Length: 163
Image (cartoon, rainbow, N blue to C red; front, side):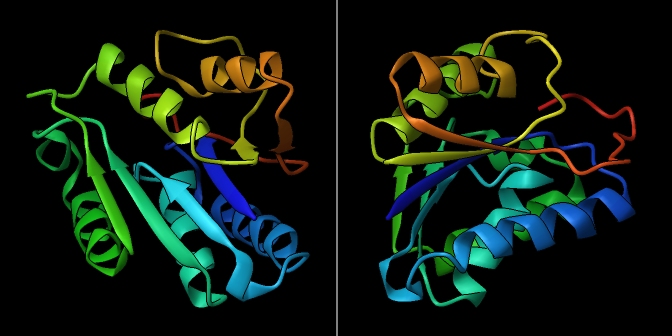
């Protein structure tokens, strides 16, 4: 089973723990050997998912939206990105020099082209721009892809940039 992740970056501590538990429950429905997780490794939902895939014995594939992507992440997120990218079975760098809406949109579409299913850590709010969570969910649904939305009761966002 090939599964991609899209989701918000700005999750508080309690929401992070609940999202992690929900992702792991979904992944446990499949044999660990059969799980291939595809992610851009952004902070928040992407890195939660990537860790769960690896810890459950699956393989990780990473799509890097732009050459300068890691530099655009905060220090903690950049460390997580580098650590998880080093553990990935496949890394596909896109040829954009800097991250932004266009590269994020292209990365989201590249992820969806490689998977059977999408997990979305999404509060249901409309897209704030190209390449965000809502847009990826909308595209996956138009393609009749299986989309599983996770937004635990009581979940909150910290107000950081949306993902």
